[in-house]
Length: 117
Image 1 (cartoon, helix red, strand yellow):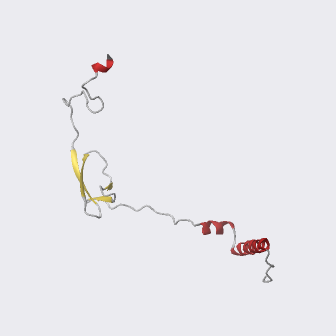
Image 2 (tube, rainbow, N blue to C red):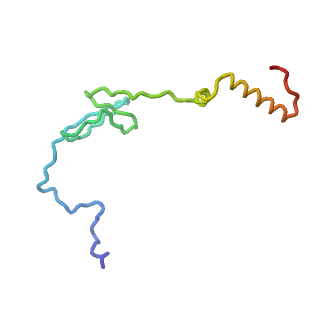
Image 3 (spheres, helix red, strand yellow):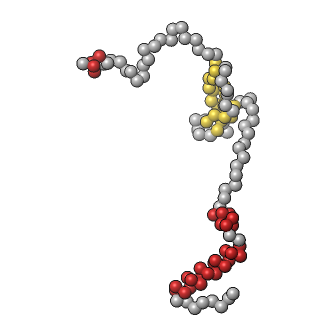
């Protein structure tokens, strides 16, 4: 019986409230332009903080027309495996480890030990 009483109404998309006596805030239209020259015009409330960048429909970053210049975030250089290794070991230590590992490898293959040292 409860199913029949809800027939014909779309509860997920429709609101039963009306717009009577609702005061909308004042709006301003802001324009953003991306590097592909796509222009996006968006309405914001007069009281809202306007973001200096907006994602364009093409996926690039669009900048606010006549807005403040966007400050770039400082980026750290990527640390490589070599950089992290050098934080733990010095070059002479690494050379010594390399010699030890090469000798172990040669012995496991049945080769004679090298006489360079």
